[in-house]
Image (cartoon, rainbow, N blue to C red; front, side):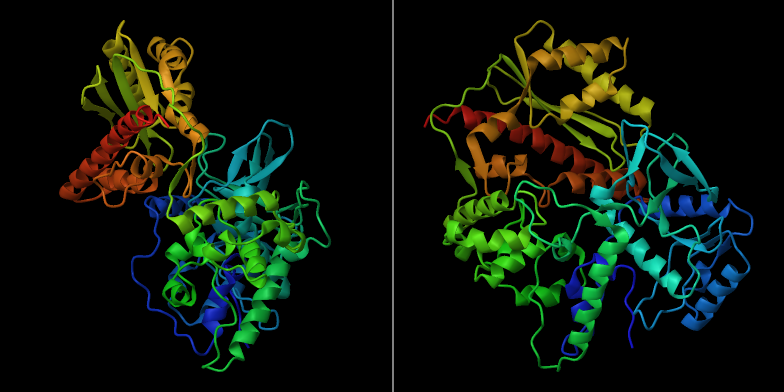
Length: 558
């Protein structure tokens, strides 16, 4: 007998396979984990709010090191006592259904029984412009359902959470402990929607809102047709059944038998304990390994492999017109499947030939020129605050210099706006009546200016007007003239085209968020200063890269 946890149905099936195959050894944890800065603080504050809420709330997290039987008994006892909320309870295993699970929360339903709940440091909702009802609960009173409008659960991005809740719901139902009100769950995220801090979104597990698996389509889908969504329960049942079948097959294999599946690289691999086992099983030229921009999904890769196309070289050499009639009906879960495959082949041809940046036009590239040229780039924190405005200023084609306006603190609305006003006041004084142009890569800086501008704010209204007439988006020009094997991000284009190199060995926007958090929160003053310097140097290199990209583009004449 065996059980699988609530992550199994939403995670890579190789994790289940490797855990049960007798010939594979589970790698030792590295100890680094995938902890997101700020997550521990959020979880601590969220649980504190929950525990301070409904009287009688039970916290069972302290029993985590006790035998599982004792933990299960404590959870059942709390439920039998009618505890309104149970934190960290371990549910009894469902051996027949192969399920085990420890919900972050168990919340008593008004009609009896319990709803499962998750607490995660991630955005859970999006604003919407309609009057459709949105159900939620305050952390201080999770048992009370409230209704508002203007919000919706982020099904497009967070449907995996709903699969976890579906697993826990099925586990509760196996013991007759599920909420009488029907299949549902609660998801607590970091959103401050409504201005009162985090809340718990009520997720209807029977709502047809999750994307279907390839095996759930039930028939052919036209190329331009969006596959109909399914409920979280339906998607979960489909995925979980496949994991159980895989676990049974892997368990029955002999130690010397080869793996039953060939890995397919996904976003999970970067932080997966089993990656050292999977990597040697992949060809160095494997499609899923080498194409990381607009990658094909697991089903698309599987169908191609079954057709004898597993590597970049094989896809580059394929006759797509001959391949598509058999391929498309098997990947009907993806909108635009033919375009996706043709794009992947284009990237394969460039990868095969060692080309990272392909010019798609001929002749000179027209860029505006000014006596005073300024390159701008902003850095944002993980909570989406602009804490750094960086500029590179050059006159008459000279080398120029770096200027920055930063605040290495936890910014609120007022602090973020004040920093932007300082930067824009400096910019207004700098440009004066000069022939000036400001260059940026993508429209992000302009969008941020618009978001921060309030009616009557003379400095910010000047900035918006100046941006309208004097800002120039280099990305729009690059997109008109180039195709990038690995996309057209500034790092790719400035390095492959202009030959620019960042000083940091691992530059990137996500990393800069981590450096900012170290600069603000690390207990060591030395580490804080090192992180601050690293962020500033990274930002300076970003604006210098924009300048070098301009110079390179202006030099192209064929």
